[in-house]
Amino acid sequence: MNTNTRRAHRIRIIETLYQLDLGAIDVYEESGIPFIDEVLSGILEHQADIDATISNALVSYTIKRLSFVDRAIIRLAVFEMMFTQTPSEIILDEALELTHQYTDLGDSKSVAFNNKLLDTILKTMKEGPSGE
Image 1: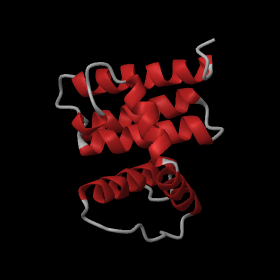
Image 2 (image 1 turned 180 degrees about the vertical axis):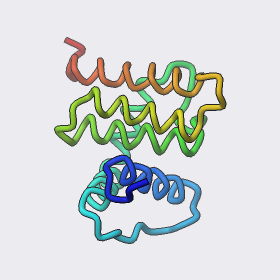
Image 3 (image 1 turned 60 degrees about the vertical axis):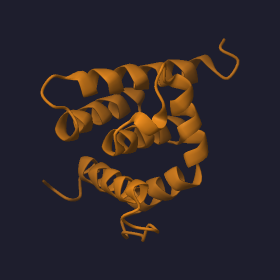
């Protein structure tokens, strides 16, 4: 895979978030790639808001029950929805492709779960804070 593609950058972000969540690394060290560094520092800076957004969209589930990899994928997608100008279709497509590649066991349950969760978050964001 070309390491300069946006997808490759997203994979590096997910790997780093996974390692941070597991405690495998204590601090993120900059990669020197602007997209990766800006997104990771943004996710870490806004993680409480991102996690609250995810938690509010979960039904009969908690954010801690998400697998480490799915949690990283969802955090990245929610950050991009909240803080970038990337079209939501691209964000959702990338998140679902990464879910399919890294956490789906062939039954599409992970993809379906993440799709529903991200769709709920996106709809809530479009409605605005007052649920208009």
